[in-house]
Amino acid sequence: MSSSHYFSPDPAAPMQRRTIPVTLEGRDVHVTTAGSIFSPDGLDKGTAVLLHHVPDPAAGGNLLDIGCGWGPIALSMAMRSPEAEVWAVDVNDRARTLCAENAAALDLPQVRVHAPEDVPDDVRFSTIWSNPPIRVGKAVLHELLQTWLPRLEPGGTAWLVVQKNLGADSLQKWMSSMLADIDSEFLVDRPETDKGFRLLRVRRGHPQ
Image (cartoon, rainbow, N blue to C red; front, side, top):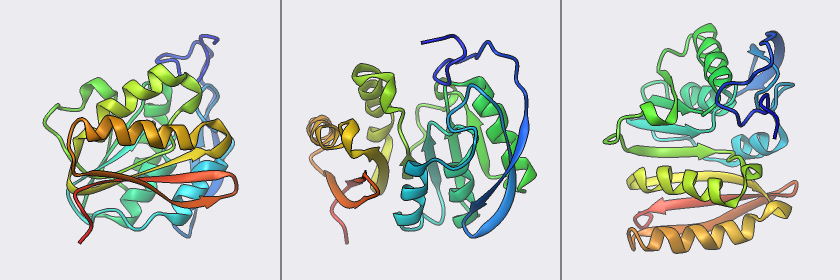
């Protein structure tokens, strides 16, 4: 893994910003991206599947995008739920910079971009969306999900999109086991499969 890889907290390669057109929540917008972040050329297939299928996030409270990149998920959450606080977290400093710039450019001040360690421990989330970084390896991925999924509020829902051939089914089983050890009210299922991707859903508390 090179020092300029998008998983790196501080990519070594110089940042060369570029503007690209994308469609988010039916809006044709322009966003800024750069190298050494995830999917710098536009909306990746997994994120597109997630955004197409997920129901609207909670209208208020705290929402979370795990691994925000240049911001497509966090920006979409903010567009759908303008009264909520959207927390966008990423280990990559360049990704955070670009996500914050894109939120400002699209007039979405409710997007709060942070390094994971800078999110206060007492913040809980009513909705979590993520296209998690599967390629970081199982140990790092598990640590990531163990950090954030238990912070789902009672009654809250998390949605993750995972490529089927990259271990979506085994990840679903692991999440079920991990979360059951924390709270028996956690439910994990797989409501959708589309274009080779699984949509995994985590609910804390039984649906009404």
